[in-house]
Image (cartoon, rainbow, N blue to C red; front, side, top):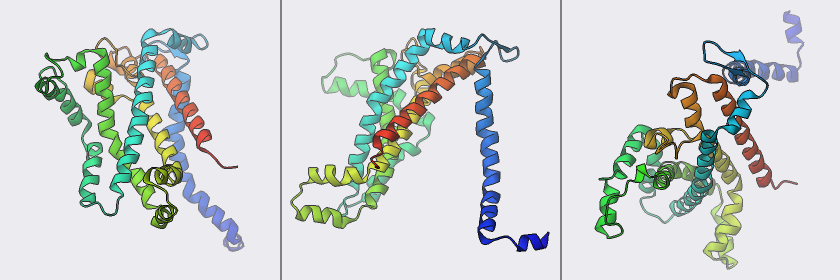
Length: 299
């Protein structure tokens, strides 16, 4: 046995070491991620309560899903948040990163910390703050009346349109700083001589931003876009903590509705919830694939 080990080539030893390091992590990923996903796929073809599940007719839960008006409303709400919030958040994050990357700016560390701080805030705390701010007797109503924009209190969280706006504002406040950190790291990897050369060639600030900054940040932009799409399609916390899906389920998201069908309303309808979860999974995969293909400029 020892003679055989001594006879291994350097390449074989490297392969052996590689597999030795990879195998434990691969096994854990398979057991903790892929096996539950496979079980969830099987569950999506069953019906009944958790203690008495039976195989349903083929694609029964998937057909039911597309006929479920409340689920389709949750899909519409989630895409509304995605289409409005993600572009605004990423543009703000790039602009803030550009401003805070200025080498002549004083107190850069303080400003960067202040912008990133919302991301480190507890979810429950920030939800309570937003609920307090936008309450009928809250600070926002007082400010709007003081400066004469409104003359009576607005029920922001009790009206479908304004409740959605509050959720979008909350998402922007919490996640803009998080994405800014990625852009800031990307900007600091761009050599300052590139900007100096552009300045010598007569490029103004806007041209420098579009012709140099944005193209060199493209990999970071694609990564943050995919992460933001993934996060928004699985949006759960804001819908639950800020509005509880209301009023009358007008702000409910896909993940919130899936939770209600699994645990939230005591129905334990795991088969139907699994089918909806796979729908979300396919949406995330398709949008990420499109984003990668659009952003890939390699020949």
